[in-house]
Image (cartoon, rainbow, N blue to C red; front, side, top):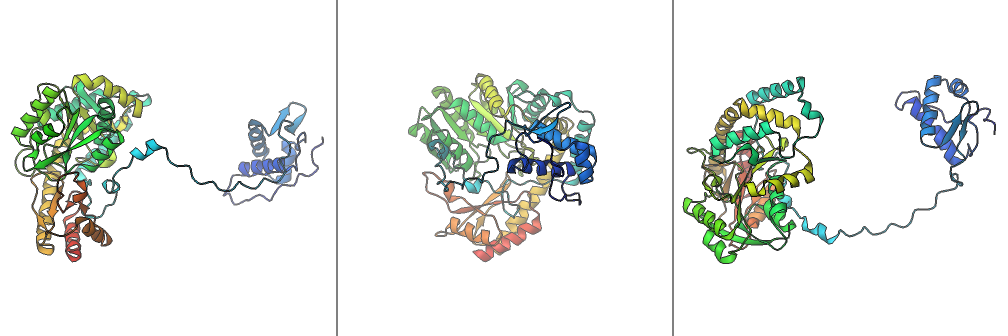
Length: 482
């Protein structure tokens, strides 16, 4: 079949918005699909079509090569280029009408286990939102310099897959820091680097628990932890919290053979109380007797404003029952996505294997920069500067609430990045939080965090990562809502 004397193609767009190669390819493909170039038809030579379109021959050659690679045409020396005879018939037939829209398929039953607390994930930068951090010029300059240094002389390990447990230099730096700052008893071989504390918790739950296992949780409790336990299909056992922290005797009475207890001993989430030494010893004694494990979430212990940070529960464990979890999200910035777990030797290999299955390994470049930030002393200096900044923000918030919202009972916390503002009797914290949101203020209600204990009506107000002036304006808005 001879080539068309003058193959008609749509006018080409000469503005440069779409490359000429792409336009020629699409036009020829459309002619083939529409039947204007039927199977077996010869295409013009690349030189002739180039002259016809006013294009360089190489542009047409590249378009033909694309059609050849996709099977639309065939070509051999001396025979030119032909439309493939293997294309199905009826390419030019009108497409059948689409079938009527079917209702969306229901989610499988297993998918319903994954119901995170929507309020727990609040990316907003509005004042009082929790989980935000600050960053000063000095830390920014150091971080930029360390990153550029790593990029100028990249570690060969970056060009292959890393250790699922985390790079050893980072694990050594983490272990050194935890021994000095938190009295954690560990060596680098016990550390697993994760994508934040939440992944560390998830890995522990995957390895340790079977559906139906009993797990103690503080009441009230960290909502993301409760959602993770629900997804694991375990039996959640609420254990009341009082002025000394988790009531261990109540936990033993409710579920003496529980497999795991989740605790935030340095600053209970959300109430902020510290687990007393007597309760710590009782908890460790129960874990030894029951063969249970304790999951210690030490989420913001670096920021203590009265005296030295409290030692970790893990540091007084002599039976290998405590799993210690920490994160750099609260100290550096959440976008870093680096956390860690310090594991008893009996769990290490299983958690390491689970880490490999779900995420292969941590981000190597971030690992290197954090290693240098820790090992060269920048981390400790950053924490000291941020502690001063956050304390000033805390004090500004407490003073502003006393002026603009005196009905709230807000005491300055000795530790952490948020405070609890208790509401007057009879006031609904959920309704108040919704009204505040309409005024551009993110105030998290505390009563939904209770499971079985009588709920406390209060608002959780974050002060880290917010300037004092913004906190004062937000306190005025909250007072107006009240």
